Image (cartoon, helix red, strand yellow):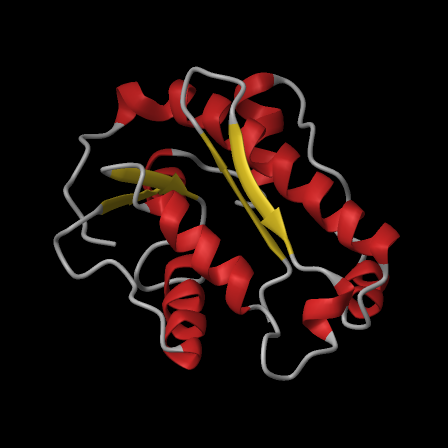
Length: 165
C-alpha cells in the first residue's frame, strides 16, 4: 500500500505530496487509490523526475506503476516521461561503506536531514494511525530535500540519460 509520496520541485520549496487517510485505509474499495492517482498527476507535471533506488529496475517507479495497474489508473506510458535514478551514479562514482541516501548525503553535504526509518510507524500506519502517517510524510519530505541537494552535488560526475519512467 502507498501511504504517502513527495515530489520536490527543483530550486523551489514546493513539495507535492498526499497522504492516505484512515477512512481510505479502512475502505477496501478505496485503499490507496487516491494517493496513487494524485501521485501520477503530480508526476505528469514534470518531464523528468529524480529519485534514489527508484528507477525502472529498482523500487519506486515499479511500485507506483503496480499500484496504478491494481486500481485501473493510467500510468505515464513509455517515453512520455523520463527518470533519473541517482543510485547507479553513486555506485559508479563513489566508494562508500554504505550507499544509503542518508550516508551519501552525509558524504556530499556533511549532514543528512533524514529521519530514522522506524518500522513501528509503517506497521501502525496500516491501521491509519495519524501520528505514524505524519511521521512517514515527514520522513519522505526530508528524503526529497536531501535528494535534491545530493543531486546537485553529483551532477558534475555523470551524463544525464533519457531513461523512460
